[in-house]
Image (cartoon, rainbow, N blue to C red; front, side, top):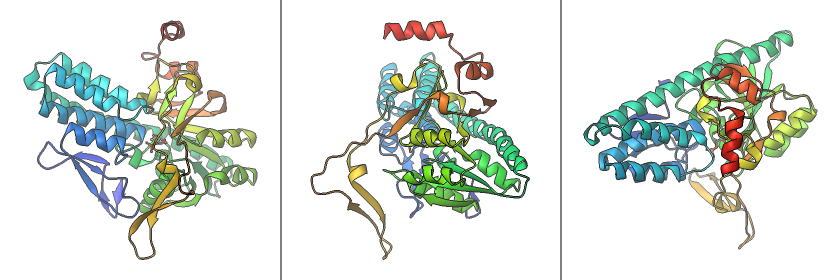
Length: 377
Ligand code: MRU
């Protein structure tokens, strides 16, 4: 997408052909900084401390992390160590496991002296595939928005509520939840986005607002607790969120607070869609509420907040009383019954095993196999 007229992805290879460069999202929206990753350790830090975040971008960064790791140690133990270290960086986004397993599978059968080249080549492909997948999600989601627009008589903007940031910053490009928004906007359909602020890290207020602003899409940031009221007042036509891991049953893990929005949407007959790239499907899990691991992050993300002062410097302040304890759940799971449809790169389907298996028959694990694995756990 464009930043002030220049086309960017969130991750790219530096001029030396080895360094991996990423937009440092911890500095947005106030500073646009590029971080250079030159080692496995750098990559693990970038994922853990959220210089990069969003499930698809975490996967793409991990793929490049394997390439950087192969430069340091391309032996079998170097490969296993890199896989284990990156896998431990963040637990919920399944794209991390997907990318690391993909890299491991391709590299372990190869002689050590060719692993670096293969790893870089595959990491670049993972990035390109992500862009193509998200663009296709945008095309299918565009049809959903267009139908709404036409059903409303084609003369009023469609109001879309989203949670967290599932725009291009969360992916290599386009985004998942926001790809349909960009496609609709670019095609001349008036859209207005309600961006949930998304405490505690404020991905909506900081990142979604920043990217919509750059692209010229109409939006307003709303407090996380406003969504229910706004739906009751008819201010939301549909919700579209992203996902960090979707179970084979259609249960959707996404940023903490998504579940509450889905409940409010259900109560107000507001359709609730999820932009779902296929690498985000966990075919081994049927019960998302029970089995998807939920990341717990540092309590300081809840007790403190950072922002720009009137003088223009970035500062962090404490919100809670001295010594206050907090708990920081980073994700929640929205049961499939609350999801109107999953917008995938192959089309829109019901949030159910049959819906997903219908679109991805070659990947769907038979239900009996899932149950067998669960019994073995
Ligand atoms: O903790 P984050 O910022 O990595 O969480 C990101 C989200 O929850 C996104 O909604 C999700 O990854 C979908 S990204 C296209």
